[in-house]
Image 1: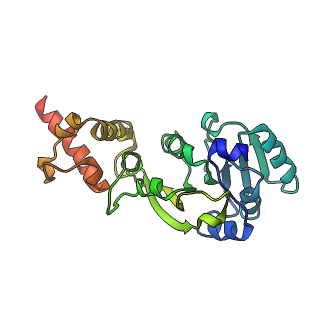
Image 2: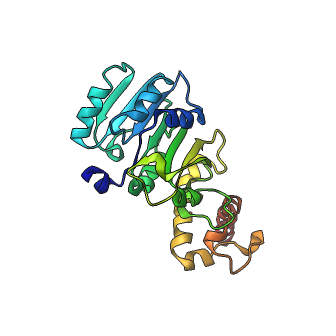
Image 3: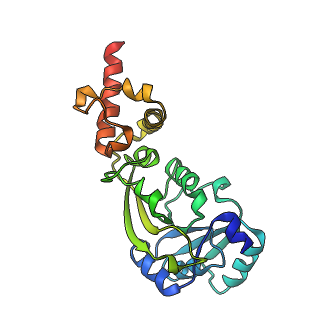
Length: 248
């Protein structure tokens, strides 16, 4: 229990539910799949029956040892003890399916999105509130991280989960999200670092946002960053770059 409290991780114990969740994905017998925060291996064991190879990553030494023991009968599961955030990602195609510690959702997604070779598809169990901020066209509000990765990744919620699906029970709502690496990004990949910097600046500094080319694409003068949809951000980035070129 100490581990759960310290790492804010809540575990799925029902293999039937995990099979159903994996059934909502594109994972198949040719895939290499990473399970981040694998715990005792409940998810890894389900993945092992569906994909070519599972990389089961566990940070805590005691749990990693238990994971190794539990995975002995699955020859296609490779247990790696360590911090996913410090690990190099592969240069060949791979996917991710994981029930991650909630407090690490943002840094894990940053690592995935900014990787030189990001996963073809990522499936994460996260807080519903966090997931909503990643959606490109939320009716309520959009988030900085979601808009920063949106041109390169398509994000959607695949399935809600119940609090009773976990042990211990979390005090927040959770969902399974799907993050697909776009074959054709909405912005050239060479421009993505500049685009991400643009998004961070606009969300964090009203002065930077005020100097963008909002008027030229018909945005209201008083619109807030959290009210903008992904397509508007892409248009604003391109229009602002064009405006800067004309001023030179």
